[in-house]
Length: 112
Length: 115
Image 1 (tube, chains in turn brown, orange):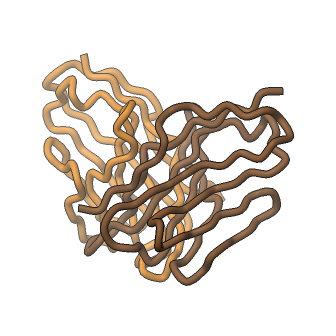
Image 2 (image 1 turned 90 degrees about the horizontal axis):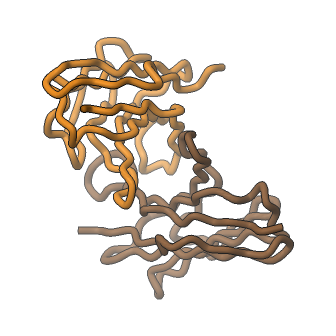
């Protein structure tokens, strides 16, 4: 079955640097991937969606790439700020059924 | 707009008790979902609904029942709570079918502890 894998270890980044988070998937290439942000005690919030035929998508300081050869999506936050500290979730459609399959998320910590 | 609203936010149950979590959305979305989130497990789909009067099983449906009597509401029931159902529950909704790439909106979560 399809799996979404994210680095479950916390990622510590110095303020002002670029944070890069990785999402790997197994088996088939999804039609698109979505990225969500989740703050402690809150529900996930949608950030970006990238389609299979798109190499890159940008929104302000956020950038997502999609490499179907590597079966991987990268999520970048440039000029990172302490307010960017959160858990970031990668998700894809469940094959043959509805709803999203989520990775376990990567906890990002931006240190001042 | 309130978006997706879940009640209650916190609840402690004794093993064997029953309860219902209520989810309401004001975006006129067709699709609604119930997820649970556990440490180290990520978000897992319990049940979902593709429209009023319909429900379907997700990845981890055992021990739960759902109903979608009105388009705006999606209820998650625990008939006989077990400690393994201690979790954070998230309700979510989306406009229509996932193939169009539309995103999912989540509620703020309901923290359930079964003792």
